Image (cartoon, rainbow over all chains, first blue to last red; front, top):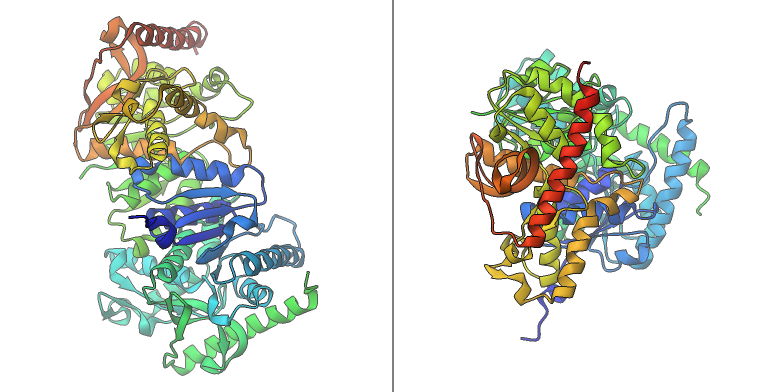
Length: 321
Length: 310
């Protein structure tokens, strides 16, 4: 018919950083068969090798889209979504500030390249510190803020959901939860919006147990590190990021918590913070201002304060390239 | 409900656990000798269960006993391939651990799937030492190479890879034996679509695929394809499907070969290998199969001379 369906239809997701989170995120996106995937990393040969290893599984997994690896940012051209996972992990003895500077630098480079090669993309930040890296990407790309969003709340929520499911011995997918706030110790799980097949969790678990599960969720990343010792979590973070990419590519308008740029919502101005959003083809299509209890609002204030401090630190080191 | 155990929570073992969860195959227990490692990996994977709808539990354990109580055990322990180690040297390195496992597996009633490299000599030795019937000790072997060849052929033909079959037998190494006459797309031999010279290039690419990935040190050894092949085998056993895949088992007279393990197409079910297909091979393929058997025999006999007694 003269119409190349691929030329016209193929969506593209670029993943920056081919470490464990990036490569596993590429796997999840490829598995959903909604977009071609381009895996970018500065290490020569590495994203290509991972992409080949993936592609070889296609006959079994049913991947119908291409997965390509590259060292060249130019190949993200035309991406509908860019997932930014690149950054170095904190090594023993490393100063938190040096780590921040390095990862901010990496995000600045990525941001410039995204703006240049994929000017219409929705950017999903995954690298930590999440709420700060999101801000860096927003500034560097100069995209409208709805097109730069951070992955945090989905991960924190799925962890909270799993811990509740494990405690109750129910199917994990039957638990719904909502975790707001910054991605870190000051995150704000909301038991009032957490339920099992619609039944409020408060009717199923006592307050002390819920408190304990909340604490476990706050330290969820740390718990994995304590077991792995030399590594950190990547399966659940990668799946969470891929879920967000899917929502954008398919325009599914998914209701999920994510780190969004706030312009007055919940009373906060000019910071990224985990809030409930509707995620669709344009990025953050809506921010949902849930009614919060006094305690929940106070916790969210504390979380916002942490992020604001982080932005101040960022401004003190930001050399803008 | 059958349970799956995994020995080793490195890149291959952890991804076997991950793909088993992704496909909702069975409850899984992963063991690793490094304390905490398997628990950390299992927890990371299960924390996405609410998102991905996993139906079965996955647990880490620091005790091998927990794995020995399962129905299908995947062995993914030991060191992965590295670019500076030959498969022979790798055998020296990984054998002690597999020998130790063999003694724990003597009373095991289920099926063992070996993903640790080098697969062919390790299956040969494990079946012998654990005194398990050959149909219950299965190496991932050429299932990985077939997967790769299918994928490369599908790319070449620009067609869905599910619709392409490809058969690779022999040793899971650079001297693997592809059988082009058994490579088909929608039932049609690929030789109808792809010229012989190009087919040869694709076969060579298959031979080199694992090594090419290995050459890039930052990426490490390939693990997605080997883990996927292992899960294909486990799924066939757990669900008793009769799926046909080329896997490594100790041969019992096929092509006149005895006691050495090589990959041949096998019908897989609850009891492990239900039966092997003995295909028509031409003289050259036969010669290469004999040669592969001789290589595996030498690798395992050398060990026998030195290895016994300790």
